[in-house]
Image 1 (cartoon, rainbow, N blue to C red):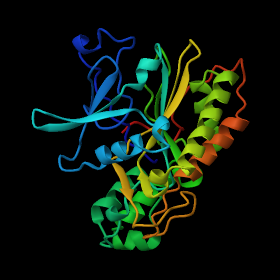
Image 2 (image 1 turned 60 degrees about the vertical axis):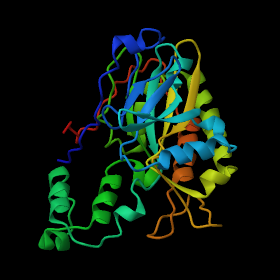
Image 3 (image 1 turned 180 degrees about the vertical axis):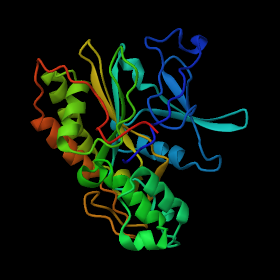
Length: 313
């Protein structure tokens, strides 16, 4: 049995902070307590690593880039009570009681710096065995240890990341509790099941997301910033409501690192240690194709659930 840990969710902000908003504010995925509502149309995102200003620099550059309209608007960096935050557009403001889905994009979800150490680690072997007892090779069983790279790639193979270049992190259908036990949604049938449930079998929503994904792809390919950076751990946030509003934006740039001067990536080629490829556009291509071919039965009242071999950890 392979077990994955469900994503953490933080509680919504206090009534005082959300009383002037159209929506009860919600954090769908990510580090608990990392976000808080700020002004009537902005949020603060806390810097997880106190000394790391990577995301601030990424947003500052993106605001001057041709890709500025496929990301939330960035306003400023804020220091408050000894902590640093970025103030960015609250994308919820464009919707009324929206359906929300977070899809992590890319074939690689880890930094190259995280996996350069070739040391064999017993703790990661034990984690692997706990998640999926049949995963280790005979040699790994003999060593009772694996490298960080082996562990990270094992995790990616457990979801749709390795094959399709994305994984559905979490979603919330309007009026329901968030669904976060999706990390082992892996096959095309499982992906289609979740997407049809999310869009409520609405063809109009499907085509709007398809169109927006094509726009994101084109903007990405013409962006000097995005083509010259590794984009790791970034998501596309999808939203729509019953009023006909739809939207999707690239979010999360805390692991967006520049390439050496003059170098660019395809964002589609396979990764090998040192080449920097992240598979971001490979994942966007996959999603475009899936939305293009998605067939949802109008009478189908699908339930989103984890595959049978997954449980909340």
